[in-house]
Length: 346
Image (cartoon, rainbow, N blue to C red; front, side, top):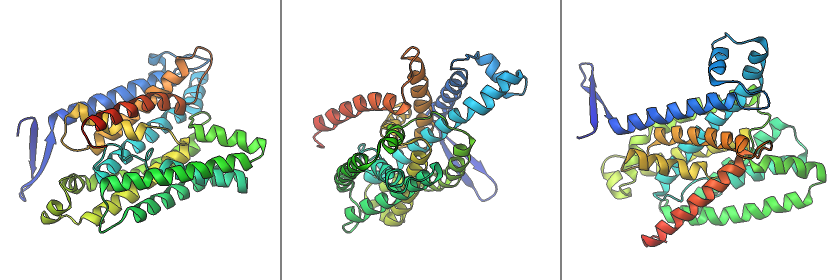
C-alpha cells in the first residue's frame, strides 16, 4: 500500500504496519511540542533564552537558572504536555466510539462531571487540593458511566451517545452554577480559578500522579486502537471480523474517562483540546480513522502553544490557558457544526 511500510520480525512472521505520513506528522508534532515547551520554560518575568534553557536542563545552568527552570517552570510545562496528550487521546477515543466528530469530553459532559465533583469538594466539604483532585476524578468517572448507561440500547449508537451527553452536560452545568451560588466568597474565588482551567502554580506534586495515569492508560488505549478502528466500520462488520464490540467500547470509554478526569484534576477543565486535537491530527495525517497517538501529540502541542500565547499575547497581563483554548476551540466548534450541517448530518 502506498505510503505504508511493513516491518517483519522473527520467524513467526510478525509484522508492524507503519503509515509513513502519520509517522512524519507525529514526529513533526512532537518537535513542535518540545520546541514550544523550551520557549515556554524561558517565558516569564525573568526571561531565559532557549539555549540557556537547554543548557540548564542538561545541568550546565547557573544556580538561579536551575531553580527557576527545574522548580518553578518545568513542572508547569510538563503538566501542560501531559494534560494536552491525555485530552487529545481521550478525545480521539470518544470520537471513535461515537463515530462522530462531536463526541468529545467537552461536549458530552465529562468535563462538567469532573467540575461538579471538584466543586462539591470545594464548596460543601472545603477540601484540600488533593481532595479536590480526587473529587474531579470521581465526578468524571461517575458521569462517564452514567452517560454510557443512559445511551445504552442494545449497544451504544454514536449520535445517541452525543445527545445523552449534551443533556447530562446541561444538567451538570446547572448543578455547578447552583454550587457557585451557594458558596461563600472565599470558596467562589477558589472554584472560579479552578473551573477556568489554569496551569498556574503547578508543581511536581501534580506531575507524578498524572504521569502514572498516562503511563498506564495510554498503552491500554493504544493496544485497542486496531479494534477501535474496526468498530468504525459498524457493529455488524466489526463483529464479523472477530471484534467484541461492546467490550472494546467499554474498555476504551473507561480509559478515556479516567484520562480526562486525571487531566481535569491536574489543570481544571481545559476546554476544546479534546474536541479539536483529533480532528486536526486526522486532517494532517489524512487517515481514514481517528489516530490515537497523533491526536495525543497534537493535544500536547496545542496546549503548550495555547499557554505560550496566553502568557505572551496580553502584554504584562496573563490569562488562564483555559480562556485561550476556549476562544480558539469555540471558533473551531462553530466551523465544525457548520460543516456537519452542510453535510446533512445535523
